[in-house]
Length: 293
Image (cartoon, rainbow, N blue to C red; front, side):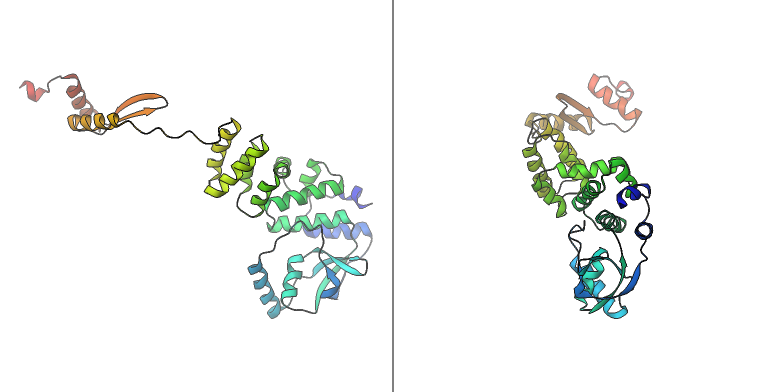
């Protein structure tokens, strides 16, 4: 069974994993041309979305130069299933190729999922939800702990835990992440809110108002405390403005009258020590030396 053996070889790159699978199965890889119609995608492929513009560019390149890197497949019934290279396979369909170069390997389901996941992680092609789902599937199929999974994909255990936590979010929130309206940073802020309904409301507000991660974190604290909206700013009383204007005229200096953290303050700005002495004399009614003369 490949599962037991593969745990010892976790943490290797994509090429190493492919070679490892070859050694474990005792089967040499075969490279040949296969009809495109005989190749099928892997239904457990972690990546679910492919950028159409990128696929079109790759298809144009394939038309001109051919497919330079073979698609990795395994025999599955009467057909061949993609292990790595589904993006290239889609581009080949756009390019209307009849046959494509492939490498045929003998892999079990766990090895296939592991290679597909690592291929996409190394290319940074997965969104946060696709990555979390792929990691969860790999952990379940391989019977791996989070630590073993972290080693398998060259990530820290905390990164694995944070990624898997995204799957605790309501479906509505996961869709916002999947569609690119929320980042993983936004999602972590939403996770700090314990109530599921509030998580949905917060996520929708973040997406609607295009909040930054820091703004989302601040708002999440309010939602977690039971406040659905941040406290509204109390307008400055008209008397504050009138007094500030009068003092600015009398002192010939910038003056602010305001409420800060529940306390009313008068703030007077001065340029240097000499200016401070001038303002002090005006406030205290102390005549200047020129007045005394």
